[in-house]
Amino acid sequence: MTDSASTAPPASQAHPRFAEALAELGLSVEVRRFPEATRTAAEAAAAVGCDLGQIVKSLIFTAWGCPGASGSGDGEPVLVLMDGASRVDLERVRAELGATKVGRADATLVRETTGYAIGGVPPFGHRTRTRVLADRGLLAHDTVWAAAGTPHTVFPLAPATLIDHARGRVVDVRERTA
Image (cartoon, rainbow, N blue to C red; front, side, top):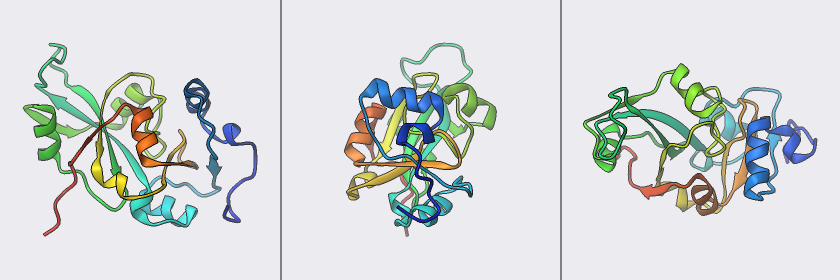
């Protein structure tokens, strides 16, 4: 544990909705709280003392024209779990979903869908059940760190366990490097 991390009991550090999700899933994880925000992957990696690739970004996108989606035409929120060192390739997400268009969700949709603010969105424990795509790159690590519902809290978990609890489908949606 780093010197700047708080030492309160694990569940008390997390956002209440996320702590409830952990309990429902029977997960006991060490939630670390930091006095400085860990809104970005770089801030979180620096606070935790891990590689940038070990940070899980929980990103909400909107997909239009997905097969089997409701016919509202408003678009469907989709959660993409990506390692902190990589960027999401929207065309690859669109192809995975069979959507006609994919775009980044705005802050209002993120909060309405997940119940959390951008910078603190955890990989599960959301207000609304969404499709989850988890980039295969997460599996390259023994442990990954994700937000615990606030911009000041993170927790570690084995990536396969995290993806399983998020009900994610492992896919390749990272931007290809040149």
